[in-house]
Amino acid sequence: MNKVYDVVIVGAGASGIFTAYELIKKNTNINILIIEKGNSLDKRVCPIDGNKIKTCIHCKVCNIMNGYGGAGSLSDGKYNITNNFGGELYKYVGRDNAIELMNYVDEVLCSMGGADAKLYSTSHTELKSKALQYDLHLLDAKVRHLGTDRNLVILNNIYDFLKDKVDFLFNREVIEIGKSDDEFFIKTKDELYTCRDLVIATGRSGSKWISEMCKKLKISTESNRVDIGVRVELPAAVFEHITKEVYESKIIYRTKKYSDFVRTFCMNPHGEVVNENTNGIVTVNGHSYSNPELHTDNTNFALLVSNHFTEPFKNSNEYGESIARLSNMLGGGVLVQRFGDLVQGRRTNEHRLAKSFTRPTLNATPGDLSLVLPKRQLDDIIEMIYALDKIAPGTANEDTLLYGVEVKFYNSMVEVNNDLETNIKGLYVLGDGSGVTHSLSQASASGVHVGRILAKKYN
Image (cartoon, rainbow, N blue to C red; front, side, top):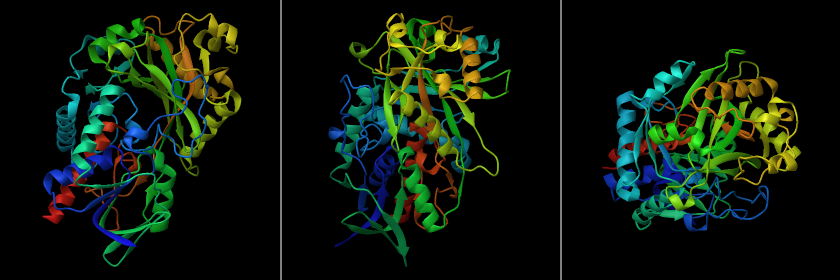
């Protein structure tokens, strides 16, 4: 049976949820369907969480990456309000409007249960001037850290607001989309839906799917970058003077050896290191909680090297996947190595890891990252660790742990106009799935932007 809607949103991540939220706030008469590949929030439980299993068991649909709230649901709930990183939404909506949209998202999150979460700022800090002394560049941003636990409460509150006004369809994968006359059709395995306007908001985990759909629909895309690196874990005391002041320190460094850019990413004070599964590839990430009872003695963050490729190579994500597969091949998943072992050219084994003063929060396989990461990226990371040691003494300690690999896959840039609309009228692509945004705050803001555009259309 053909089910008819005004708007169908594919993907219930940050951008999809905020599209629906803003549509309902502006126009409650719009008939909306959200189709999500993964589970509802209450069923998003990783089967290895809390168990002794070392690595991902490759569920058909990964609960860490898919489901209501998207990959951001089980993250540490960090919203960076800035145009300096996290995407290029400002190129489409303007710098001032992008900040206004992100501030609006922050207001919504606070109204839904995030008001007690502290808003940090990196502006006017002594850390910035100290970092510059060592050619480290701290980017300005306001940061609202919700924590994984509070983030789930907020997302559930938003769902309670939407559930009686929007139709949700979970555990459904869209296998085909197309347009006939003035209507779009959306096919799942057993169902067909039509709508006037179609919003694609599939996030990072939908990178391959959206590339295939754009190819079929003749929507132009441009190859994007891939960031490859490691997740660093060390005693929380090493970065305490930084995390207490700014929480998330986004620091960029240009290496002396290759002039490559390395940056810190996703800092989790008193957090834990976790697995994530992207298109069947097991990589590493980090979480942190707002509840002090869930805090650990460690802080973790990523060090990422940006890789931009020139002609004729266009498969940046495949390059990142091939490196991650090496880690999966050698360690059955994520590898962990002591920094001291890495610089001395020896493999970390169970015995050396057991003697480490830094206790790992992820049950990863001890190994040798030099057998996985290309020499250039590994040299960049080692140089960056020594640079960070100058502003956070102890970063380059022998027992600092490096987990590999961490890969950030960026979707190909989909060609859209300032409304985030493709060359097919009524088809919008937004959030991290579009390649325009790379963060929770900007993905959510892109949803608000499209929600407002569609609300006017139906008034």
